[in-house]
Amino acid sequence: MELIEQLGRYTPYNEQEARDRALLLRALREEENVFTRENERMHMTASAWVTNEAHDRVLMAYHNIYASWAWLGGHADGECDLLAVALREVREESGLTRLRPASEDIFSVEVLTVDGHEKRGRYVSSHLHLNVTYLIIADDAEALTVKPDENSGVRWFTPDGAVEASSEPWFRERIYKKLNAKLAALQ
Image (cartoon, rainbow, N blue to C red; front, side):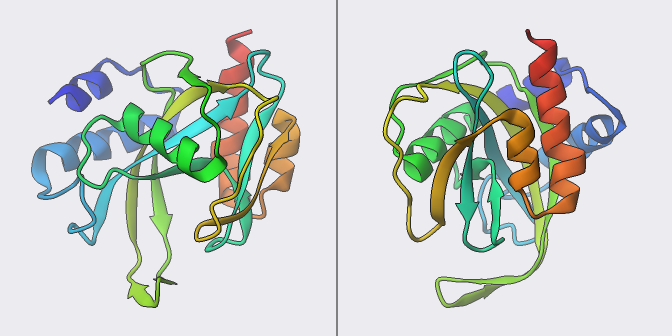
């Protein structure tokens, strides 16, 4: 499986990524239906840290379920190419069409906890998102649109402003600051 090979080549940035990469690899080898929501305990997702060409703006969406500004991304839903999933989700959630991956390589890995919640009138139990993040470059002059069933706002922030806009402390401290540090290292 290509994703197992990609994760095997991936160099973790910190202890969180090392531990989470190990869990992702174990799940990919041992779990059934890990690319679909049929696996109600854990399943694959893809996220995008979307920046403009200069890397001085980061795109965030106001996520309705979590009531917070957040990165863009979503469920694999049977797709094994997680870069394609990340690109699809950015298009769907923001309306942007002029996108390109900064690289086809994985930018970051995370195991994310998801609290139980209602979605489309149905209860979804707490579970794990086995997440792979890609760095995506977008045209920050292109018009943005919301996806009302998922978000109620989409806008560009400075990298630090993106961190401050999130109302989720764990994401701010453990994910978004890490992504910004990795972004700064590219410049």
